[in-house]
Amino acid sequence: MQLQQAEKILKALANRRRLEILKFLKRGKRASVGAIAKEIALSFRATSKHLTILAGATLLDRRQSSLSVFYKIAEDIPEFTKKLVERI
Image (cartoon, rainbow, N blue to C red; front, side, top):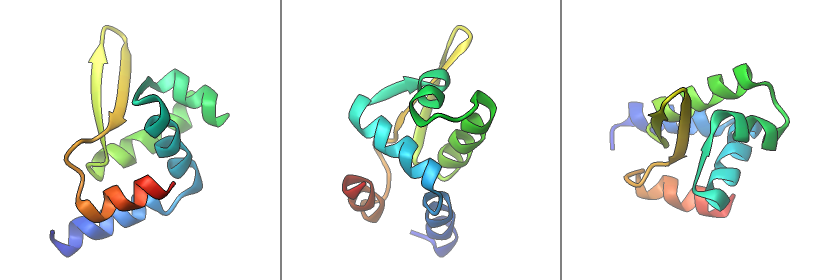
């Protein structure tokens, strides 16, 4: 893994709200932006920004179905990241 990618992942993980999102997705496997926002008590817009950061760091996969966007933890995340996510 390149240092630049590792830095991007670590920066994405360095936020309490994003860790809450990962914790929620770890339990439920897949959820819409609205469901995630409700779970972590944050606005839809702010949650969407956090999800964009996590997806940009290749930690989440996103899938659009009609007007809804669903996120899940990516299957191909680096090994060190898997270990971190397991501990959340």
